[in-house]
Image 1: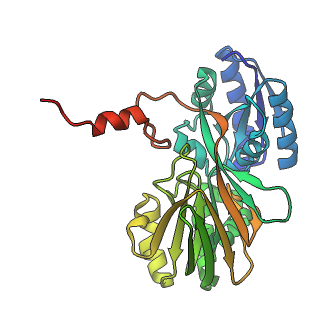
Image 2: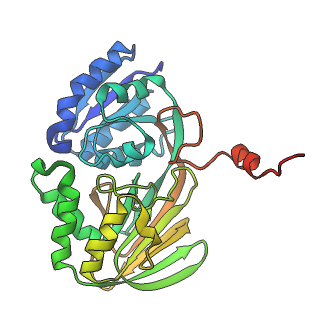
Image 3: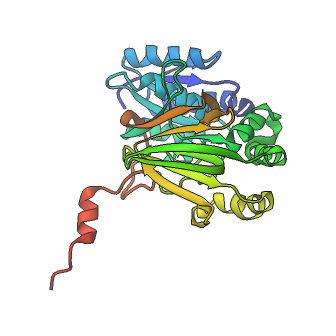
Length: 324
């Protein structure tokens, strides 16, 4: 890699994990011959400011954080021509890094940065009409997930990765069914459903490894819209939650999956939509996929990566009839 790296660190991410691993990441990059400079953030607005400065200066912007700051930086850089960003996992969930195959260890993640292999990925964009639309990299969801995210964000840091399961269990105690209305396009379709959660997925995972949208791809220009219909709390706890970690919940009759470029979501009662662990808009919202919005440093792979669509040449080869 020839471009210098701007290492943007969220010192509070992961209960302080990002601050702990940042020196090791910085030293690993220097050992690998990558010029880098570290900047600690005060908040997400400061992270956006630092990222824009770095991209405008031709630097590669690398987030040492969780998914929240990664999403904020991607939102900031999606309109900067030539911007490239990387990730060194420093949060509690690290779901985008998990989907991309970026290692947890800072020296190994730094090696991905140094290798300089990048791919264009999509982002999702949420517009609630109250201000500029905001982008996310993972899954934007609303309903039960709104309550679970809020509780998880308020939970003690010592829970670590279990904070998401803790949030879900606490939210379940007080949950009451909600009636959602969706408009999907394409195809043009309207849907009214009583559900726990409606999710618009750009990526496959959220909540520290829950494969909520196992068929979502990061480069297809589409959203995977997941609807968890109303079931008893016992069924939700004993049948759905255990399956979501492997993505097997989508086989249940109470889970409906759609593919759409955009979706409008409203509800009979107010909810904040959450994405990448943070609130991103208040219902009603319009969510759309923005294809190839940002270049992300990823591990080089010898074949199709599960986060991306299979190359057309490989599909054609597999579907070609055998000669003989």
